[in-house]
Image (cartoon, rainbow over all chains, first blue to last red):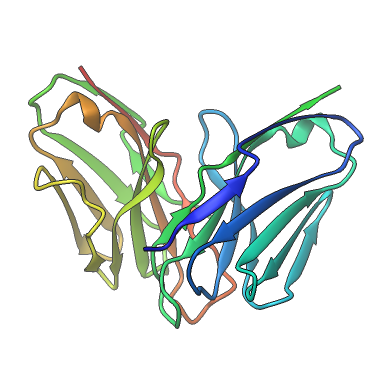
Length: 114
Length: 116
């Protein structure tokens, strides 16, 4: 059974600081996703990571993937209040081609204070 | 472009009633997913379809839950009879075929279901 663990589950930080959210998963997979969810809203896709060593950046967010360690990170640089949200990592359930369901981590609830 | 469309947005009903949730995927997407989100269990996959065919329904909690996809542009998730523990936000998502590996699943706005 695929398990996805995120840490921390809750993070309160100040504007301007840097921090990293970690996502570990238990079995081989070929795709890892990061999503953002604002309170009462839907999930917004941030990144899709496909291969070992993949790094993607969008604004103050950067995601990376180490498939050998089964670890992905989401790094926040110089945080601003607008980044306050819950961040989920999700792993495709089966290796290989085809669309499959995702297993989600429990999410990291991020609060960025002025 | 229209995203994934779910209806209703909110549903409040009494225990024992039948509940039907609806989803219209993004045009051209041939994979459709139903997820449930609760505080206790987080986001869970219930069932997904490829080309209108159910592929994996192992996440469906019990026989009270059923899902159909009669055509490429419509899916339903039905709960009969409903119970208070079914209260959750139900999300529908769709995606392009698996070969488009750099594309995410796109989520609808969800249906917030409350069973009294």
